Amino acid sequence: MKKLLELRYVIVSILILLIVWQIAFVFSDYSAALFPSPLMALQALGEMLVSGQLLTSLGTSMYRFVIGYVLSVLCAVMLGLLLGCIPPLYRYVNPLLQVLRPVSPTAWMPFVVLLFGIGDVPAIVIIFIAAFFPVLLSTASAVFRMDPLYFRVAESFGIKYPALLWKIILPAIFPSIANAIHVSLGSAWIFLVAGEMVGAQSGLGYQIIDARNNVRADYLLATILVIGLIGLLLDYLIGRLEKAILRAWGGA
Figure 1 (tube, rainbow, N blue to C red):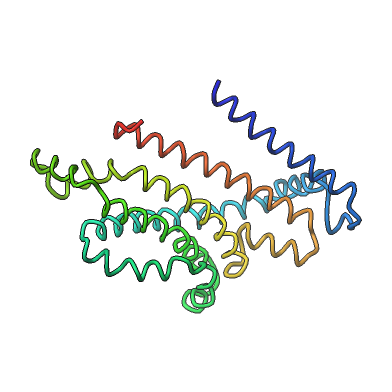
Figure 2: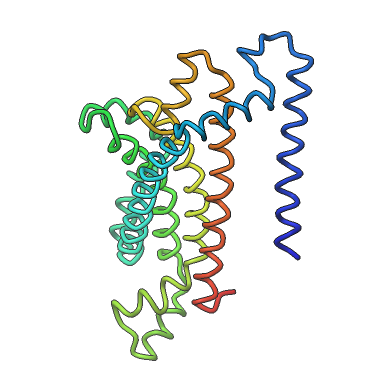
């Protein structure tokens, strides 16, 4: 029943968006070629599905996203655990991380393209950067600020490294990591599209640029709609994964 209610909220939200869009189209003075109606965008979506263009672009983008995001989260969690477990190292490295963290991943794009050229790698690197700092800082901070009681209990039971990481530290700080993973997922998906607009010649981001260059606003808006829906789906899936891990560790 709860899942049906959640699905209802999603459907109603999308319908409201389409209604507002249609009203804006009806009362707009712009040409339909520049600002198409929802029906025109849906027709363009159907054309892209029939031609295979959409599935090809989606497959390319998801390939880049999965590689960049998974590698970023794994590296960030492992490095965050290391920094958090060595307080002096964390205190020295943290200021540098705080300097680099606010820099937009796309600001690195000229150097990324210079080093890796055009293709999959620049987009993967941008996704990696977008997801890396939130997860790294949340993990390191959570370990650094853990209640010493956890370590005293572990010592009483004779739990030492590396078992201490899996049995005590990770279950204790996982809610903080999960929140960072959730936030970084949205950032990584956003910057995947931005990265493909500049450093790739395929994928959903490139498809937006191609539609703009060919003055196909219907294709452009259809692609934007797909990007939003995929982002919603990814958010749902990562939420389900978080709950499964919490249940496995007795946290839910």
